[in-house]
Length: 175
Image (cartoon, rainbow, N blue to C red; front, side):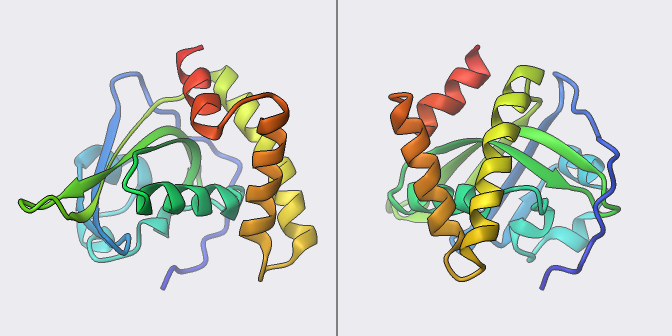
């Protein structure tokens, strides 16, 4: 169970050389974390392994984004996203995340492999604006239907721009 961490307003900035790498099983439990993950998140390895990856989920992240991530991964496709995470002491850090299904020798999905890197200021501005609106949708919808409501809102909003989420996010990264 994730303990309650009080968010601060302090940001931890990734450098262009920082690559956060982790692996999980199919349920999202961490099975591997690299030293950069431990350094940025301020957790020792023993406090991460075996825990749900959402141990670093910041409360400013809409649940609808993670609903979309899991839909994408369950369809055995890779997911790209701009994600705000929280450190063990409440600071935050933004990443551009790429999560890919990891397969065993028989080709079955055995877990997920994630690489995260620094994200541009422009991408942060665009994503955080959308996410703030999604959080408002979630607040109005209530906990039981929050992820579905904000994901539906996100899809409608991006459809109006003739964009899917992946194209939107990759455009932020490449732009």
